[in-house]
Length: 185
Ligand SMILES: [Zn+2]
Ligand SMILES: [Zn+2]
Image (tube, rainbow, N blue to C red; front, side, top):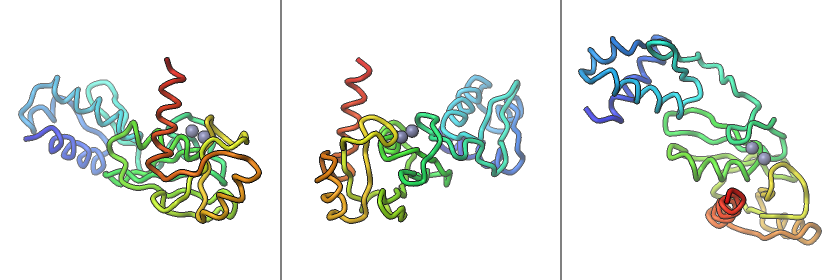
């Protein structure tokens, strides 16, 4: 059985039963307790609802405990910049603004899609079709700021007043990742 199969099995069991035990899983899956511990570590890191407890792990219901807080930086989520990402396993991951959403996409490997908010009209749109204004001269949420617009003309109008650079999703991601890598060194 592959690691990914084992982890899916464990996650399903957690969803169904709310709790798993290392000893039990190691017998069921015929792998060492050490392997199960590593699987649980992995799941706990990837799935905010999975928490390791002594001797196993628990699944914290359908309630998203981090609701209203950015999964990247922990800040509250402003309605004009909110981004909701969807993971492969169907989990919702919320980001305070496109800046953090782009970092989440870069650092996690389980993000399937994302919905961003138009900065002017607060309309929800697919991240792939959004226009990104990177590093405008405004303090909105995170630095460097990234704003999403549904219409390129709106982004241009905003750019006239506040500068910044208009980019695609990929370009904006590279820019933010590059900037944050520099900030860390
Ligand atoms: Zn954030
Ligand atoms: Zn932010």
